[in-house]
Length: 321
Image 1: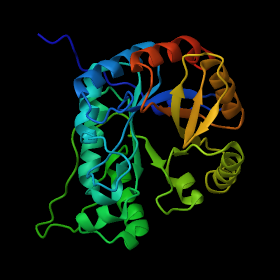
Image 2: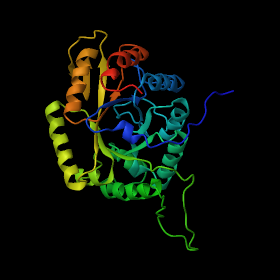
Image 3: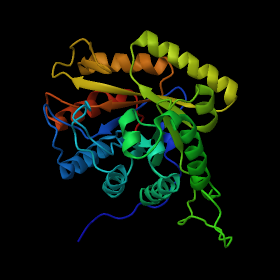
Image 4: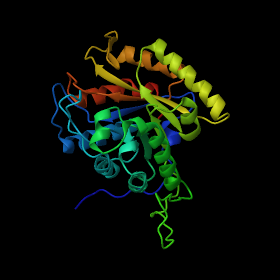
């Protein structure tokens, strides 16, 4: 008999994940060793449970609907909602974040239903990160016009936001002839938080008005400083007096030598744990509220990497529960 039980509903995970003047640390799934492209997802759920128990604040799940020979990521990703369901019953504390559901290639009411379901099953730990995808050929495969993605993103966001809010409201594509009024069940106690992942062709002012925060890729410190300054200015204009988070996804190759100085990688670093703490402290001082580590092609066993991060890095940023 399974020993898993559905968590009790609780407050939204967003305030615990994104706090002003603080930095939290999460992980992007799947967590892979060197040269690994065929993913054992049963093992990934075990790693997720290990990370959850170790104190990582978030587990991020990607949405990759199709693969092609020209796509740089050869990994076979599960449908995000299937994986999120598995994570919801195998973890207890970490926020579960979609990073990011491709809002423009899915019907927004389906996204809303899946988001409400994940929020309920996880006990309120779900954050709905949405983006517009970064592969134009996918638009053709799904019969969409890639040139219209900016407007489509905004329109779909409005529908999702209404449906996952409290109170929930269904915006139908067209009203049924018989006047039927729709609503969504189950009725959630808290709204599902909406996070913008990437810009999706939108202005930072639009993102600041409509999302709890903005998640972007790692860039060199000077470029990231400029982007953060742009974000803070947009928040002051579009949402004065309201907290809006800023997060960064960082590729990480953790050295066995704790003191190894950082070497720049594409979208991240190879570094020892000691300099990594210093890097994260600088990011926190610069206004970053969350870092999601992408551990791919790890030369070390992934469990060893998680254990070292939990022992030497997390305590510098996560207060004891």
